[in-house]
Image 1 (tube, rainbow, N blue to C red):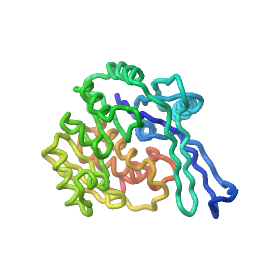
Image 2 (image 1 turned 30 degrees about the vertical axis):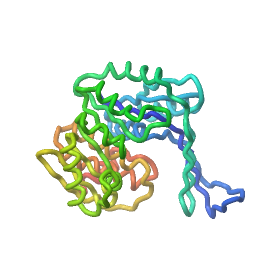
Image 3 (image 1 turned 135 degrees about the horizontal axis):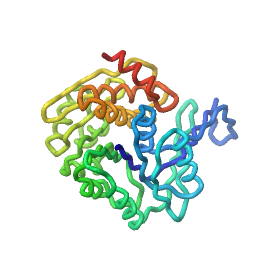
Image 4 (image 1 turned 180 degrees about the vertical axis):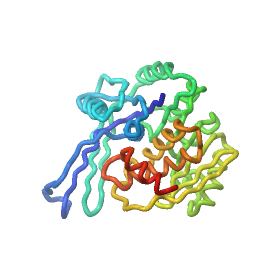
Length: 298
């Protein structure tokens, strides 16, 4: 079974505007409301690929109810903790000549709420997958990912985070970490320009404790490293329409590929194709789009 955790889910209000003018009244020509959050994105793509999974995290108010409704409509099983105060976020994504985002803060999560999450994690079984993705809201212990990993010793934990959140989990030997090339460079204070650069610093993450490292490199493709193997692949060719959720899709694709055959190289390529398929689409990729790219990559 696969579980994802999203600490601060959102409704993403995507608005398209022609000839946007700051300070004026602007009329949209298209708009949509989508469930948002990195773990939630992973859950949606897993469901698109036919992989049963459960989305964990925290929701509040009428917006939280709508997030759950939209996810269940998309076939995602939800087991969120409902907070007593506030509302889950609404993030505004303005699509115009230049893209602008306004991300809200979200409701307060208390230590008692965290304890409720830990009780849910007690139900996970040996060999399950748990995805920890994205940043954490203000007010939550910065070591929360480490605390979760301490509790989930026999679980395949995948961490998609940056800076200290990522660095702190490495001694706990996560099953996989998935930085992009920018995040990997920031961690070591360098600029990652090539596959060889990515390989070298991914190997350092393995030395620091990660079992597997998947570095996504946008249109260049990616690199996969563990103690025994190194894989490279170029990205499939296509026009980037929307990069939001591409990294999360790569995580979902990797999990789906690995669960199918326990082969790291095939799982890595599935991840690259899932990330690309979402980048080439208005929405998160479906199975047909991913398989089509995977076939072209072979």
